[in-house]
Image (cartoon, rainbow, N blue to C red; front, side, top):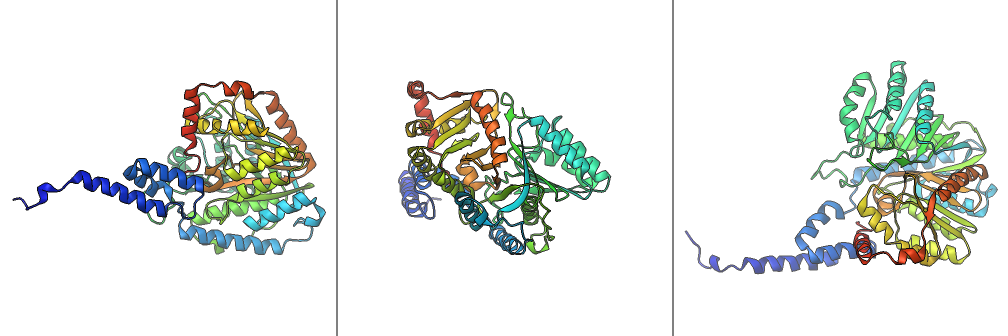
Length: 480
């Protein structure tokens, strides 16, 4: 049976009209609450591939964090702000006792995150990969009350086994053990170790599980990228190192940087841990136990800088740009992934013009081809601005640190890219202390010595095909 006129339907015309309808509608919708660079990237993709671009946008284009998670983060901020107001004298750092640039940074960071600058901490920087894991295992063996681990990647391998054995020894002697693992980065450990741990009485929580087409879940590429350990509320670890073998990506053994801390700042690390646990567990921030601040153990001022899509501003990116604008003598940045936005580039350009020594340490090798291509597309701008670019040779340098002037240091999990700035949950530790800055300076100098300095003349002679590949990869520098 046929219907009059149906044979004359021009499906090609309908398809073409649908493509133009997508282009026109998305031209008005995509730029909403989005940077011009991000909007430009999405509109370019949708213009050339309307249906494919629309489907990809529906999956990855909307920076969606469920309302429940946003509300809980707001509740946590209120709890932290209230607790900070009742800290004992001498714990909350009196900003008037700090230099202007440190006090200004601390005030900005607290306004962004609610976490205050805390006095009386001891901070030790660890850059020995295996030694850092052994140190953590020893602290776990000394724990008597509770062990809290929050990690993006946990490996079921021979190297991470030192932590696994320490964790299992602890639960056998009655220590309360809680482990939070990202649902993508630690998928193998959740499947392999999770059932055994739960059977032993270890609490195992999967963070941000991927459930497609589930309206209450965040988009799949929003991950919990934090690396935090808290032992008995007295000792904390924060930095770039996952609990996995350094060669978990074949051919690219990692080199890391971790801060081992004691003192009041450990309470801030535990607050973030318990917040992440509550969001995946009971969903009740009000059920969080009160965290007693630890007594002073050193002279360092320290402040935790958590970041995630739940915050109204990009906390780490905003702070970092402000610090660069205030720098007077040096800005030394180490990061494995460098795909900056325009405010960051503008800040380092003006810093160089003020006479600041700006250096960026990047890895000569990378475990992500597309990212390294996008990263290299920025080398011309760095070199033209007068930035010294060091390319680290021995291993894949996965460490993330910032050194500002004589006494301010940052160590954490955040890269210099849009994923860390806006998509992932990250944790960074800002420290004002000349001794800690000297520790970081020694590590940086070793990195400088084991790097080749990028030569502008040699870089300018790279093949046209390399330039083209780098510029194409750069188009995805703002996938929001």
